[in-house]
Image (cartoon, rainbow, N blue to C red):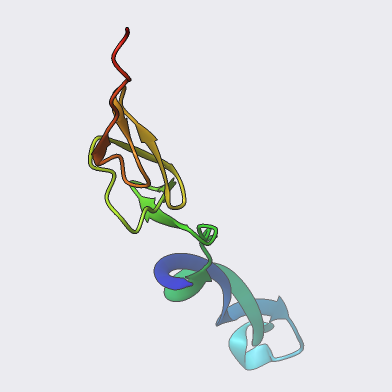
Length: 107
C-alpha cells in the first residue's frame, strides 16, 4: 500500500445572517437572525492506495515485470527454459549444455 495526497470536498459550516420582520419598532420592524448554512470547501487529505503485487512461482524470478525460469547452473551453450532445465544449442548437451556431442564415425 502507499499514500497519495488528494483534494477532497467537504461541507463547511458558516454563520448566515438574515433579516426578518418583527415587532421591533426601533429597528424599523426588522430583526437580525442567524442560521448555520454550509458551503462546499476543499482540503488536502491522504488516501491509502493499494497495488496488487504478483509473486513468481518457485524456480522463477521477476525480470522486467515477467517471471522467468532460474537455472542454478548457467546454460553455457543454450538457454534456460524451465527451472534448472537448459535447452541446448545443436551439438551441445549435458545439464548445462557444456558437453559437446560427438556422433560415431561411419564405417
